[in-house]
Each structure stands twice: as structure tokens, then as C-alpha cells.
Length: 215
Ligand SMILES: Cc1cc2nc3c(=O)[nH]c(=O)nc-3n(C[C@H](O)[C@H](O)[C@H](O)COP(=O)(O)O)c2cc1C
Image 1 (cartoon, rainbow, N blue to C red):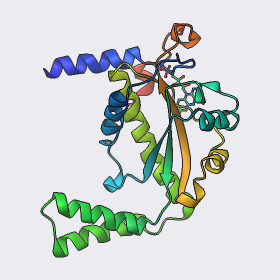
Image 2 (image 1 turned 45 degrees about the horizontal axis):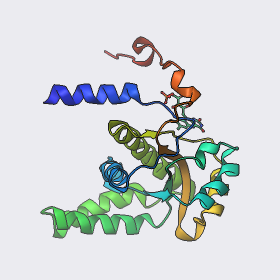
Image 3 (image 1 turned 30 degrees about the horizontal axis):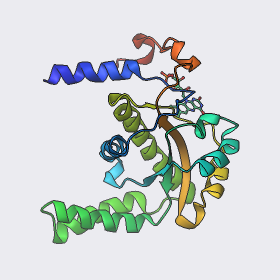
């Protein structure tokens, strides 16, 4: 069973590529929900998940984002556009909320819960705005990685798109007033039969160049 799942994951990772042209097919609501539910299981620092995933299917909104993506039309032509945004709200409130949830799911109360909160607050409550954005972005990128793998495991295509003007996205999506900031976009859907990127072979560093064994 375990070996089968590993083979399936390897197959999915080899099957996937960054799709540059999507077909007109739509990802079903059930599959979309499955991808989102699995992405929700991504690890994050202290478990705080300081980000959100915006799921955009409205054509007009997607079209408005193309210019803010240096003309990349895959931002509009896809099944759903997912935008990972950093949660820029109070980190103290994030910790409070997390601790409450933690105590509901685990046997931790009183002084031990207070000590856990304290440790977390010391680590995250004194960040500058820019540090918080960097920190939240790192967690969002981990979630992006999870989403790419989950989508591939369901034979759903995706393309991470970092070539965007994030502050333009913030304006178009009116994120400022929601204490959110754009990190990265990721259209999902199904590869078009004429997508030129499908014919490119994977280019990766050899393992010896990528991995340094220390000791
Ligand atoms: C953080 C990140 C940003 C990326 N930004 C873009 C982008 O703006 N436009 C694009 O076409 N591809 C983008 N890509 C896709 C990469 O070019 C692609 O993943 C890489 O060349 C490896 O190829 P593969 O994913 O097809 O195996 C991005 C990938 C990542 C991980």
C-alpha cells in the first residue's frame, strides 16, 4: 500500500508541469474542494496559517488581473484562479485564535496553554510589517507547493505565477481593507492540447549538484 502511494506520487510529479495554456474545461466543485481541503493540511510556522487562498472564477475579475501579470493571459484563461495572500492582521489575535482552537482539539488548558501562547507571541508578535509579510509569504509558498502536488495527484493542472505586480493585485482585489497582501497567483484547470510547454523536457539540476551531504 505504502509503495503504491509513493509510485503514484512520483507519477504525479512527473506528469505535472507548469501549464501555460489551459483548455476551456472547468474543474468540478468536488475536485476543487478536495484540492483546497488537502492544501489546508499544509504545515505552517506554529500552525498559524497566516495566509488565505482567494478562489476567483469571475471572468471580469480575472481579466482585470492580466495587465497586473505582465500580460500573462493564463491568469484569465483557466478554470479557477487561486491567489495566495498574506494575512497581515494582528499576530497576537492569530495566536489567541489558534490557542483557543488548540485547546478545543487537545487536552491543554490553564498554565500550560498560557505558556504555549507566550512562546508563540514572543516569536511572532514583534515583527515589523515587512517581516510579517515575508514570514506569511513563506508559509503561503509551502501551501502553494502542497496545492501543486494535490492538484497533480488528481490530474488537474496548474501554473504558479510569481510574475505579477502584487500591489496592483492588492488594489484590484481591494485587499488593503481586509488586511491581506498578494503573494502569488496560481491558475488551475486542464492543459490545452496545443500547450507548447507540454513538449518541453523537464530541466532539473542533477542530484549531486542539488544535494550537499554534510558529514
Ligand atoms: C514561485 C514560482 C513562480 C513562477 N512564476 C511563473 C510565471 O510568472 N510565469 C510562468 O509562466 N511560469 C512561472 N513559474 C513556473 C516555472 O517557470 C516552472 O515551474 C519551472 O520552469 C519548472 O518547470 P515545470 O514546473 O514545468 O516542471 C513559476 C514557478 C514558481 C515555483
